[in-house]
Length: 120
Image 1 (cartoon, one colour):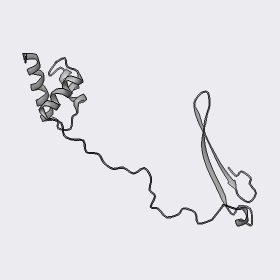
Image 2 (cartoon, helix red, strand yellow; image 1 turned 90 degrees about the vertical axis):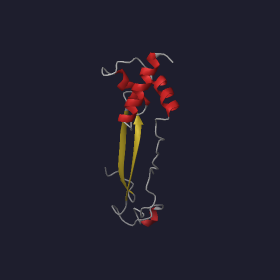
Image 3 (spheres, one colour; image 1 turned 135 degrees about the vertical axis):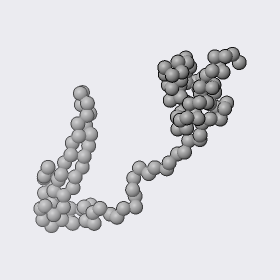
Image 4 (cartoon, one colour; image 1 turned 180 degrees about the vertical axis):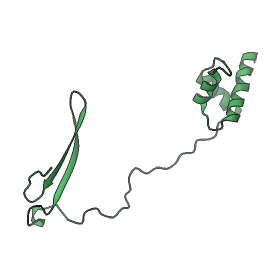
């Protein structure tokens, strides 16, 4: 092992000891800063860190995208027109994304179920 590699290893150990939450990208950025001025790439840092066992295992948090345990939002059944007996008794809404040449636009509509007329 030559002196340059040893100097890089010492710098990596110092930075990993000082900043325990740093990954290989941030360690490589720190080594390139004026305080160290060493020319290293991320692969070299990753290899050295793996050999020395300096990285902590990643702790993944379980995240849920939707809340399926909430109570029903609407108790009114809108499956058949027979459920509504007068206008403005039940409104329904929907939103959609429309692709145009310049980008995307969103279309939202509110409709009266009895008259099938758009309200907004």
